[in-house]
Amino acid sequence: MKADQKKQKKIPAVFLAVVLVLALAAGVTAWYLTKRGQEREDSREAAPEVATAQGQTSVVTEEGSISVGTKSQVFELDLSEFTGDSSFSWQSGDAFPQMNMGSSSAPGQSGGTDSSQRQLTVEEVYVEAGQEVKAGDPILKVTEDTLEQIRSQLEEDVEAAKEVYDQAATAQKQTESQAEANLRENQMYGQYADTEYNLAVQELSESVSDLEEQIAEKQEELAKLQEELADVEEALAEQQDALDNAVYLVENQDRLESTYGWLVAVNTKEDIESAMESLKEEQESGQDSVAELEEELESLNRQLLLAQRELAAGTIEAEGKRQTRQLDSQNAQEIYDVETGLAAFDTETAQEDYQEAADRLEELDGYLAGQILTAQADGVVTDVLVAAGDSLQKDTELISYNSYDEVTVTLSIDEADMDRAALGSRAEVTVSAFPDEVFEAEVTEIGDAQINSNTNTTTYEVTVTITQNASKLYEGMTATVTFLGKE
Image 1 (tube, rainbow, N blue to C red):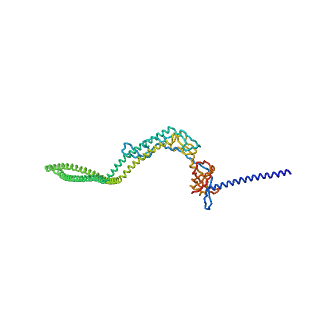
Image 2: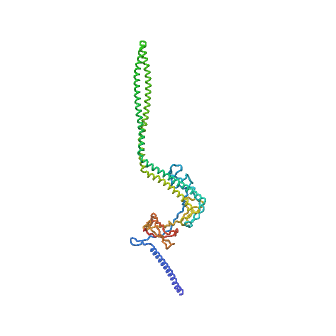
Image 3: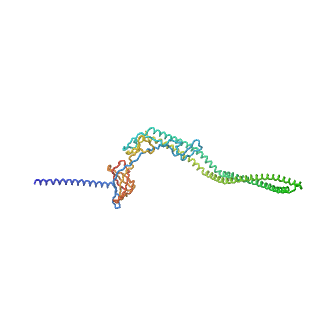
């Protein structure tokens, strides 16, 4: 009986314990739900209300991780041999300055130091990966000897550029003087262009006329020679007939019966042969004279043809020259302006080259004060890309560090919500480390559509870039992004 009473006393205690546990659990649950509900209410109050077609609010909120970009600091000095933009080239012995188009030599130099040999050597590196640096903190130190060598070479570049500038300024003065003379000459030639044309054509025409007169004279002389030759040949033909008769008499007359007649015939034959010999000599001389005169005429005709061609071509050339003279006269002032303008441009370009060379020398001392190169921005060093003994040239990478210009969050957004997350849309980012701060952001990238074949849903990888106070954030922080859409 006492045992039963004891059991009856234990049951209420167990029951009370169970009830107490359940009550405690219920209380915790109620507190959690109340807190969660309050957080949702706070979230609704913090998020802007966006009116939908039905008058309700629509907010797209997703979670992702903070990603902090990196950027590199490079060696920015150009140590190569200075060439500049000037193409001016002039030696003191030249009559006029010359434009040396396409020249790749340094101003005032026929050759220079190999640009690949212009390097600085790192003596010591002051930073390491994981180290936080501020703008102006030392990064590395270069050796004194290589720095002095580069400075000396840049000083030589300045001197060479100054020499070219001085030459260009001198040449400009000479060009202006010559241009002034050309201006007066062009104006003068314009006044005498017609006279110059007439003189040139007249000279060529006189050459043609002289040849035509010589040909006419030679033709008359040839006609006379041909007439005389015809007379000789006619007399020679007559003598030939007389000779034939005399030969006939000598051969057919009886020398014993008519001795006198035969002797007369023989003497006549000999006289005729002698006369014919003279006529033949005269004939040969006449033929030679005619042939010689015909050759002279042929040569004169060739000269005449050439002179006529020269007259035609010379007339065209003289006309072109006359028009050029007239045009130069009309444009004399413009020609003067161009000539002096080019000279002034050469001088200005050479002066700019000189200033640029001087700036490069000045930049060296400012960039490497006391052999020290400093950080250009704040950040945490992620990688050191140079070491002691390395060579430095333009664009050599030195260090990489966090870039708070590229703090992003990438999230997967459902296709139905993409109207709020369009490219360029505004967004707000919150992180648990800074519960009271909202970071403004903007949608800067949208990836290709990704289709889930199991759920038949389409999503997009959307990247937002934080635009304010990004330096507070660290890689990997959990962030909540609320997309606000475009204004």
